[in-house]
Image (tube, rainbow, N blue to C red; front, side):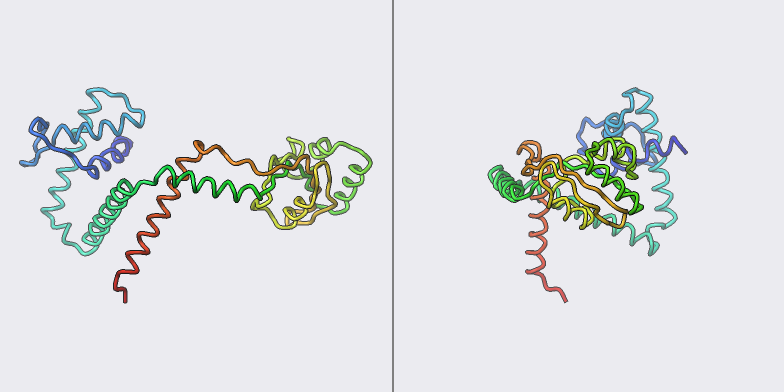
Length: 263
């Protein structure tokens, strides 16, 4: 079972990928007259090598054996008329559709690359939107019992260190060991509303009163405030390119839909 699984992914890629057959492409085996070619073996070998397998003659022998086994099964399936069964025809048509759609989208994306100027314009736009977002260097203490939380708040007001109380009394196991530190939290972060609203009202060095959420009672301290820092253009170029290509594909599909007769 392990041996079969070992080759399944690579051979699937081999069968899905287009193989250019040249006059020099040696036939390494024939199965009832059907050729197994060296190019098929090499394609599967490359896939396995990129996944960490060692490049050895034994690897290619095992790949060849698997290709022969697959061809034998394919021929027997054809003899038994498996391809004529309704459920199998549906799967074949689905696979065919997926291959055509994926191939079309890959070719379309290559022919409609995003210009560098457009990438930079989108980056500048996002940078401008980010400039209105504040970031808060935040700590918190979470206490579920309100009476106990009030006692901790009283100790803070008497001058005890926030991080020391957080590390000993907070019930948030994720931040307790770090003195309640949450790091830099954006003002548009996906946090529970009462916590986010209270945090945004605090100035540098201020500590909140009790803030109740579904998790319990929070005491929030803001150590510092700054404008959100955008990543450098080169850091996000790849991600931005993917985003803009997806957006262009969505627009292309909308254009096709607008021209189509859909009833």
